[in-house]
Length: 398
Ligand code: FEO
Image 1 (cartoon, rainbow, N blue to C red):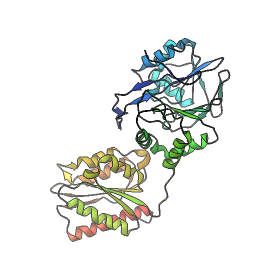
Image 2: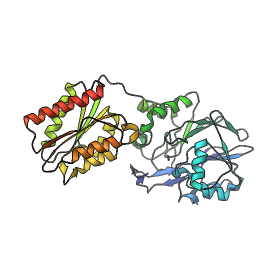
Image 3: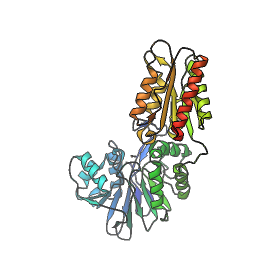
């Protein structure tokens, strides 16, 4: 039977481990599995469960709770975030604890009721609201868009514990649970999680950090991965560093290309030369050598994006399509975008890439550049000119 793990007297981890998980939310690799962390906080007069677990893991949650107290003896359910990996077990929990009052932001309660298709007994909280449990006080710190509009932190004042929802999480399952006890270093998982889940909302991460800046935090209890007790300030500092807007001397373009016979690669060199001559630095990536994950990260971090692809059987090369599939609206919107490529007999790739960029609300520069077979010296000049046009769009001088 699954057992709870004590964090402090009367404060327990009651979540679920999912070590076999290999893909999260369709897009994330999870080589080390994950966990869905839930916490039980007992006061002298009331008890609160903070978050639940994913559907399919209800028995782990309910067994761990039962080892401490029957769910019917729990008074509150705090939902810091209602993505189903944390709310999937709410229905089962409410069946076992029908008199519970659910606490969350306005959006959290809305989202939860839409998932359950019924109303719940609830209390909406706003910044600074508290919940007295008897000798223990939860203070609520709504911080939307980390990474949904419903999200908030809950801070246990007396113990200086921050229940942080997805913030400071990592997909890393280890029954040892605490950051200073897990068997393997999890910082790579912590960074990858930040890059995929939080980086699109970097501005909101900064706002969230400012909201908790005045709190003394001894332990961070996130909803995924290790509990951070060894040095919480270290993890906060990493989030601060990663989410700060980078200032560059010159704007940066990510120029990613795939080339079957060297023709598109030659055009890429000329486009890069034009970009640099136009005042924009260039990070060039061969999609086949670099891989789509790294190229997508470069594109999302850059000020402008240029993709080169030949046309293969009427469509762009698969890595070029995959690259655009990895780019999201939040971080792509408004960026100048260029496309180019060599073709043999049809040449649809460039138009398709430009159309996809428009779907992402990027700013396509011209119609892109198509070259039949090997680029001539005139074609290379056009490619350089095209690079300069992208540079001008990036600098705002077009
Ligand atoms: Fe872990 Fe946004 O759910």
